[in-house]
Length: 435
Image (cartoon, rainbow, N blue to C red; front, side, top):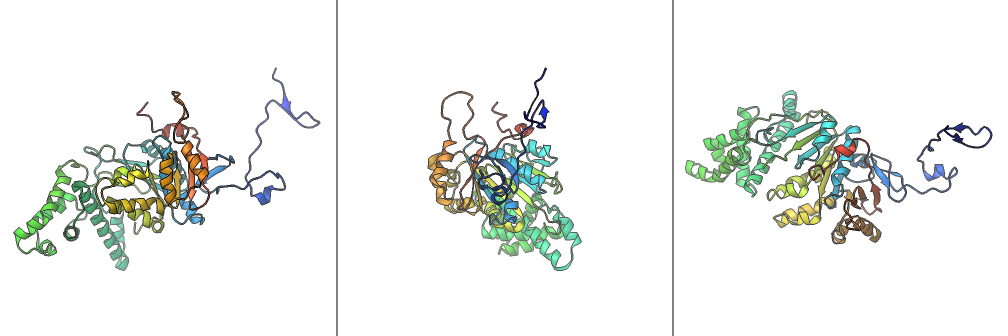
């Protein structure tokens, strides 16, 4: 017979099982009269629950856009830094899950492994698998802006057309930079811009082969833009550009960017992941976005000048209503970029991110981080203690797994430990390939 438990006093009540007491959060002003042994919360209860404070045990929440709206930070940029295997992607996946629940759209801007496919599919999002024989992306596709251009009139329509032109030209230049591993010259940018204008008059949704064709055709407006009246002079001016575009159509990226978009982005999806692991807004409703750039070092090393495009995201995210999360292993990853100009801009990413999240890092790395984001000695010692196991015991859990220090400006950091619950253990797992 099961013994009864409860409070052994008159009218105290007897029960087979006594549930744990309810937990409440309150300010020190409210709670001090009821329970004098209180401590002020070291973290705001705003955003997605990340885990519990390692010192006080209270719940730590984080959402860059919510923190910005509450005036806790000056911009919604997040820079996540930590050794491989310490759970950086797991931390970001928790943020993604929470941001979707709060109504933001998560954009995974190039999933290289891929790490986010299972999560995006689980929440009913869209996964675009880019690669030869898979989905194509037309960099000149206007996407949702095409409907806006048709529906708008007057000055607003003109502004939208210029926005479409700028996006087309920027993406085209970025691809050319990537394929030739060198930036596009000023003269080539002028020629490409004129080519985009000509095609806009001829076609609703031009493609890169269309750009190549009009360059080889060499009509008078293009010769004028190239400052070359003679056909021979014109062909000399556009020779490098023609070969670059030809490589996009027939080289290692053939079948990826050389045709109409096969899977348009669904802006109504809660999350969109662009899976590139197999590759060798005007006129619409106001939305909030969470843009994730994982393995940042790999994207930035693609070619000189690509840092410029990432840099623009960190500068305009506040105005665009978009939070950005950049993830990398070490500041040394950014030092390995090809030009000093790119290295200087990349070092500014962490400086312009209002929120810095540190996973396990060695002391030498923390000394460099402290030059940008000031760390106290106890903070450095804490993060360093997460960087390596204490023993050689096989199968031991890494001491830094799921532990993070959240820093905002000169405030004391918030040490938090994330605990996975339910299906998160499967959706956030990045070690399946190793096992």
